[in-house]
Image (cartoon, rainbow, N blue to C red):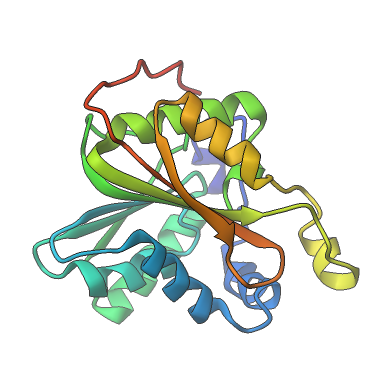
Length: 219
């Protein structure tokens, strides 16, 4: 698909799928696999879970998650960049992973209410302006089942210098801002802290009520 077919969004869309995995490796100093496993542990994935990865990039985390949900679970990845989704589908096919990928935007998730047990948001929120982040959080609350959880990982205030700062100079989101975002959407923050890698932090929040919020307007 041509990148010009990407859906409209107010967020930053990364189209350079061919370089994305290399950048991820650089940003984690070669510890990308360690980061994936840390995120999966935070999510406490179980056999049979239905998982959504928002801003999935080339699908590496989603593919890894399939090993934890088994044949009775499912993993879906979305990204606004068709090039990312095309590469994710190729990687899943090569790995024999039962993950599905589709082009979609974070602020208007194309899924029914209470569809997922776990939602991932990894290095994605800082790409969204404030209003779009709020819409995304509302959508996460909507698609989570009662007792479901979201795991958000993002950069805190930048401490990077040199080459990595040049490649990733476009933003950060403080833990407190993510917590406030999720609480405002009706989620309950249950755990926060540093990932233990660079200036990455995590927030785990839960959908503890059956109440479904309005979508708050899609993008």
